[in-house]
Length: 296
Figure 1 (cartoon, helix red, strand yellow):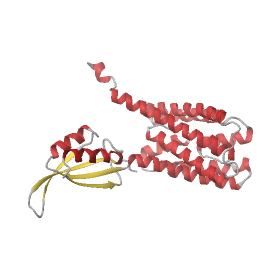
Figure 2 (tube, rainbow, N blue to C red):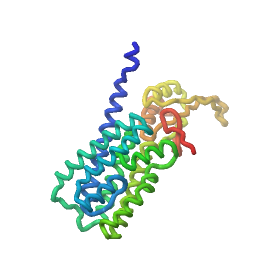
Figure 3 (cartoon, helix red, strand yellow):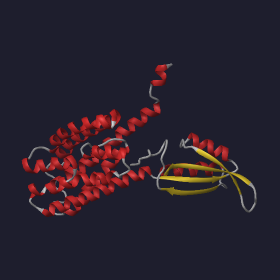
Figure 4 (cartoon, rainbow, N blue to C red):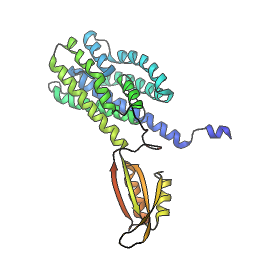
């Protein structure tokens, strides 16, 4: 009996498998943005990839080896402060990105995209990188490097991930001038950093956006039971009175993720098409099933 309790459920296994797939997708996106658009155009990225790029331009040493070596030590820090679960997924992300960096560079060898259009290379490359990091963070993973530092700070302080990475990476991008000897490339590096941070926040915040519902229906018990079952959200019943009619009604209060709105609307329509429904966006929801409370 005890072994059955400790054994992970099928749903948990599927969720973990989905996380690893999403992390792999994020690493592929990041690898494409970095090695296809940014690195060939001498545009610096932030964090460990930025350091690896600078080392590559200065010595020709492959970026994947520098990236992996530095992350090895940062992963020890992640294991201590962020826990084994985060570290395992970060290790997976680092190994996956290291592998795909070699694969992508081999597949794109001799291909120079947007060689004479550094601004477009900056925008597209940064979008790929920011999107890749965002996808990895949504799956509780990381590309390593300053992402680990950002995740540590975000765990204890209510500061956006993109802002932390933005602050951490400014020195690295500025230092690229000593190798490239071109302030224009440094400016492109800052533009890359800004776009990457913006896209990262958009991806992460869109996954965390929440909404609230007020639902008035005579079939509140059936609607509430279905919301409890799927999308597995809590329902609070509030006793209310119509001012004009004086009739007592039951009003349901529901908090859910924005992506679950369609599911809730569909089941309400199937059960009671005449239900009165109010939906509104909320700035933040903290508690079980949502974000954790973070205060200084």
